[in-house]
Image (tube, rainbow, N blue to C red; front, top):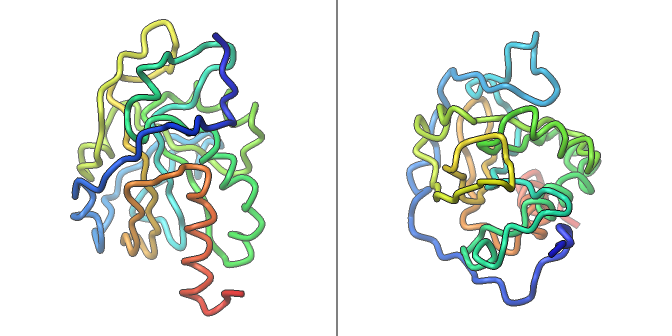
Amino acid sequence: MNEDLLRLPGDLPVPVDDGATDHLLDLELPALALPATDGGPGDGGVCLADLDRTVVFAYPRSGVPGKSAGPQWNEIPGARGCTPQSCGFRDLKQEFGALGVHVLGLSTQTTAFQLEFARRMRLPFPLLSDAELRATRALRLPTFTYEIGPLGGGGPDTLLRRLALYVEEGVVRKVWYPVFPPDENAGTVLRWLAERDGRAG
């Protein structure tokens, strides 16, 4: 069964706030570098502690065209919707740029897998790979386990729950969690930033 990865089924279960990100607000990010699809500064990756005026949206895994994750994937609250979430930030990239805000994606998939997704969907921002789960463990990000198997994914079966962070001078200043529906995440974040900067409307 082929699935349209850009469309969200109308009966998806809604994730609930389990408090798994309460510790992230005002957290100072560690000097931890993650590989990025654009190579990052000097190919040394992107250092989390150096992030400033940056939105980092985390997603479980991007889909594979022509391969279905199966009905069990849709039954996990918050699992479905990585492509719509990413494309939402893509489509509003200019608006984020007008506010002087950078955008980064984050998943536990490998850079090679992310690069194919970024090129296919024409994402104008880097995706960070935490395939070794270093940031996931250091920041105690919420996760769930899903056996990828033949679907591919180029990473571990430990996947990030969907969330978004706004970082200034290496400190998390705002957290969106849980994120639902995923295709509205970018607009929600953008409105908050515009209101915060007094540019709403």
